[in-house]
Length: 207
Image (cartoon, rainbow, N blue to C red):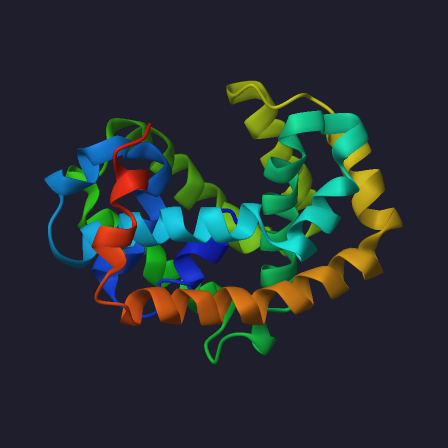
């Protein structure tokens, strides 16, 4: 799952939202530097990633991008799943996507000085471009993939990714639709479990 889904799955708790958003940039036991629900949000991010990467529907979706992206197919699928969440947002949230994204921006700005350096560096551009909101459009998906390919090791096969998305749109949407309720149930179970810190200690020690 990419940024929008991580934010959405955080619910209404501001600390969870911040922690879930920065999860990729907090390695190993660095999560212990944070307190309260920000720390929980970081571990929730790791839970979401682990659940997603092993889920049968997500693996089916990623297979559509395997030929052009190989081991990065899951990264592309993360963006595609954010597209479906944004495009069909009203089926998942009672507030508009515009309102949700604006609220998330305000919370992240409020916690700006506690964010990891890399997040501080890209957050202003993410906010200015309304990138999370623009996931709902195919050109938003295209822009995100191009940005990622120019700033990371993601191959620059954006045209291929868009062709695969358009060609297999129906199948990908169905896979996402089956995946998302199970993802939400898994998040609820994680947050309700008093063992969540213990069970994720092995993850926290890695990286």
